[in-house]
Image 1 (tube, rainbow, N blue to C red):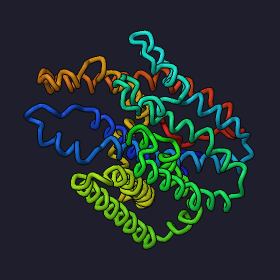
Image 2: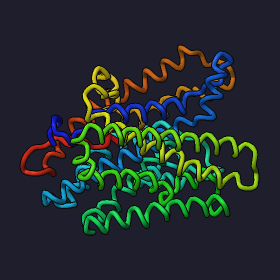
Image 3: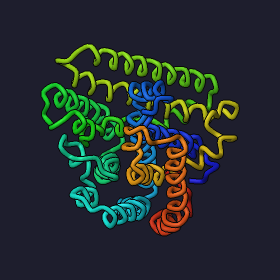
Length: 376
């Protein structure tokens, strides 16, 4: 897919950057006295959860459109998996190996086999520099299973299975897990693959509907209409999100149920609305709110996989949490930690990820293309 093609949505790179920065913000300790107000906002807003949900919806959308394009072109499914492996594994296993050498822990085998979401979210498991890999495990499960649905089922049946089976089942599993405590903790429920398939499936549905709204977007009036609808979705989901946070603070009996609904509906709706709005806005040059001059933001989107991977180990080994609790962490210390995270991400992208991605061209169509793929 040529970058100048109508299907190449440049603004999604910037939205991916926003998602990564939200996760970094979530892991930034704002406990210093001068930042107490920011810490309260961080606690209530939960930026990391929204960031991860944005990643999931984006991945669902981008992966589904790639799979549909590959299927139409007759590209073997194994080539898709080969490209994914070349994109994800090198940086992931490099980081895992570094952490294993510096600080071996019982989590390493779980991380290495992409099962960390079943390990880290147990109550007794201590914090680790690889704790954040739970979301990468969920995405890897998606990469393994979702292509089978897209490739093996007729398009309409795949849409029906996604919208009428996967989405409702994910919500039902979330409800039952939360209501009856079927897993060890609510955190485990939030990392449970069937539950998180909700946001990934929303992104998939958006991709399935792309041929329809591509035709509709030829009409500027319709673009403005659907942009308004997207804003309404974001607003309603955000109101629901905030309301459930408030109710959660008042109720104890159904607290876990409200958390589950909040995560599913609130953040999923906001994420879907943001992705949809970005696609719509990208069609109107004057309204490309995430396009140039936001070149830096788009670059952060391209290195977002490395930023997500490396920021938490940097924070962990610099002991930013411990120093924040003791009052020893300064703003300069935190700035250094963030700068080192960006440096690691930039080095990873240019020295590891990008060179190896070149091999992925062997597993594309005979005509060279540049596809917009998720960086995580």
